[in-house]
Length: 320
Ligand code: A3D
Image 1 (cartoon, rainbow, N blue to C red):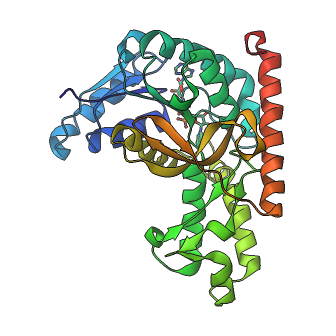
Image 2: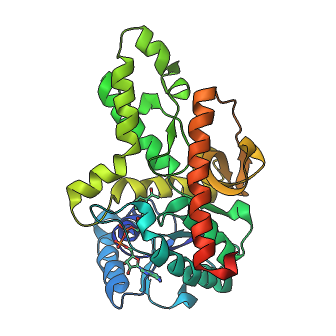
């Protein structure tokens, strides 16, 4: 059986970390594509030289030629520019939209059967644009944000409750950004919902509210600390979890930006919701009953995504 092929479009901070993780997990052979000359080949060579020490047999190649991503089973897209301190994700729109056009066309020409995971920000708009430019079916193009946002939420909750991160599940809906909706009622420690834990005296509503707020601005906190760029370890690991669920047909239930066609009252947008990822790509969209507060929060998020799509359409007439 041939090895899987994983193409990473964008070989920067997240792209390099993705290559390292994919190789260490022997998920398949890895192609690092970037427009920067030399850099993807340098990273591929460096990682290949880690192989004898770690004992992984993935083959790694760096390239500036789209032909090298031909036949990829999974494509993870980080091409574009990240945030600098003081920038919002939306400030990236104009530049990254043009990048999505080039990447979408590259995917369409070389690996139209791939499962595509977009990470480039502003996420919910870029995944939509990438799908439009690539012409791939909606169930084969998803955005990574919810796995990361809920991992941030889980980390803060585990820290507050002083329990293992493994026993904390968290639920985050909506767009990636300040309008995301962490849902406490569906966030648990070993199955016990957070509101019950508050009743049990494990924490207070005030502390939970502060954690929700810190989760919403979790990316910005790291941007401010790094001073030059945005988070990359946790974003990479989150996308790898999604890729593994597809390649191994694990059918994980993961929060991702998925294309909605009527679910949650939304039609024709990519928004963060729980989905099942298996060999068929997005195999199911999990539609849960939301209370009034979560519904209102979700709507704010949907409105923000709609605004970004309108901006994309204004910038590129082929999207209108
Ligand atoms: P960075 O290290 O700058 O890497 C981006 C790479 O893209 C660079 O190596 C560029 O040379 C390359 N690139 C630019 N234009 C093209 C092109 N047309 N084709 C191919 N490659 C190109 O950034 P990063 O890896 O830190 O972040 C990548 C993206 O992910 C940014 O847009 C971030 O905002 C975004 N991001 C998203 C999340 C989410 O949770 C959604 C989290 C963190 C970062």
